[in-house]
Length: 425
RNA sequence: GGAGAGAUGCCGGAGCGGUCGAACGGGCACGCUUGGAAAGCGUGUGUAGGGGCAACUCUACCCAGGGUUCGAAUCCCUGUCUCUCCGCCA
Image (cartoon, rainbow, N blue to C red; front, side):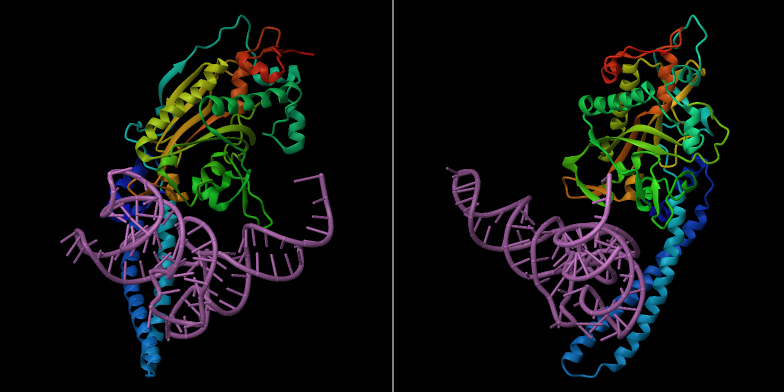
């Protein structure tokens, strides 16, 4: 969440944020309501102070055996007035808050302005497009021929967008996320967690998925009000919700494997084949909590950690710096990693690395106490490290052989019992 | 699922409806003491919001939300969570 003090101190900045992020929000209305709120608070608190003072007096007077019925009568009215003003205060607060929650994070200064993906800026590439002396196939053809994903029965079980891995396909999926976790925990210094995948509403608000994206989330009925997580970012970031950390404990590096659930509302018909856009997928996520001064250094380190995954797998990728119109609601700066998938002939988004600055921390009340005893919001960052289906696509299509078999990258072989190749039976 | 007990500050733990932001103990920080340390002594030690240039001041917060009252940590209702016992269960 943005700092609501800005309604009073710098509404122009908020308008600029909305313009850069390409959202339309009535800031003037919020400023007006916030002003009313402030005036009301002054009036209300004066009344409360009077009530406290006179009530105290009634106490001493009664103790002395004197009569205080006139004061009691007067305070009865004050009490009623306090109740009335307080109700109005809550109303105003809710209205202001609703607007504040809908305002996106301010983009970092070096983020290019733009409307959408066309204005994203490529800032790095690694490797090059693999060359084939045959026509590379799309992953769905490879998978069907090798019998490692049962697309049809997946649909029978759950509907389109749900993947049923089989045999060595299932094994490869498991091998990949184990490899990612091992890499981050043993080489990059992350602590592994295994979180619940159903979380409550407060957690979803904390990381910014709610209230804005409720349509995209799966939730339980029967009054539980629980949500299937769209990413482990939600439970992992919320681990420290409503906490005050010690500066000496920062930075914290966390990683977790989890399945992720996305309704993809409004995306019907887009990228529907194979593994390109699914409702449930596996992902290893990385989350950092750090002091504000270090967050952009931490972002670069995070980016290097992600790069390491793709480089170790030998996948050609490019890195995009997202423009203001394409960056997510909660992010101040974001890099997307896109891997080349030669079968579908596309760059696929396989990871994104974001600095949220204090936007999530303010929503989730994650603070730290610095050496000089000041309490302040931490900065949070996260990255997919990495998301499976599209990485799987890039991997299958990159490592396919003329005979339709798939060569397994060397780092994955230990996780596959030493197997070098997935071949047709 | 049934029955009971509980939730107070960094921790432990008091708290008759009034002067309680909260006794007491511990921890921590600072100061004194010391050659240095320990002990000892003293002082301090929450979060959020409003007003003020500031010193400062006011308000709210004793799990959460309602209620009673001139006045609630304290009384009443609801919810959440924790613990104990019983039942059920992978």
